[in-house]
Length: 190
Image 1: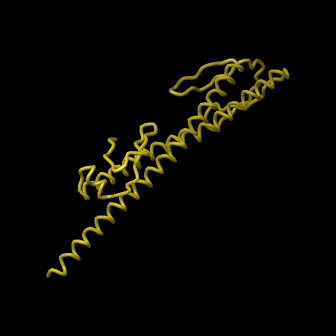
Image 2: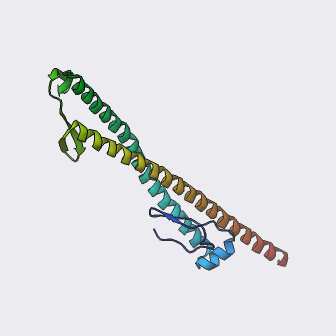
Image 3: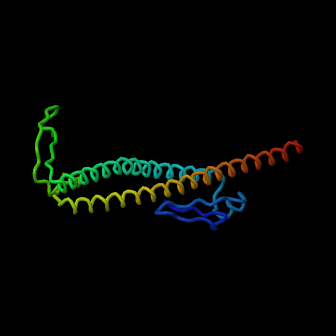
């Protein structure tokens, strides 16, 4: 995304690749400094809004993925904690597992010193219970931190969309006012 010239660059920032929008105080100055006419400026601002919407869709998809991932990690942590409790108590784990679709078998697991974690990309690794707990805790912490950053990015993006929409309205209204003023000047002469 390219950053447009603006009337006031103060307050224009960038957050993780998302360009900031500047509030246009004076439309005429903005148009002169940018070197654009009204239609080009409106076209540029509409294009910027579209870019913001694409980025927003990507961020929302990432947010949904993380919001689904966090409960899964917490569930895995609960299972590891349950396995550790069974191991400490010296109890065997009795569980049902799916053999085929809709067909289950009951098993008794006596030695539960390790657990297999699905890492994704068709990769599963066996970890000791302590290593698995440590890895899952780290993954949970990273997922929550990433979610916080995403929420901040989305808020920043929504602010930029609002500023850009206000700028579009200001430029459009300024153009309408200029046309009406020119029309009013021409009418008395006729």
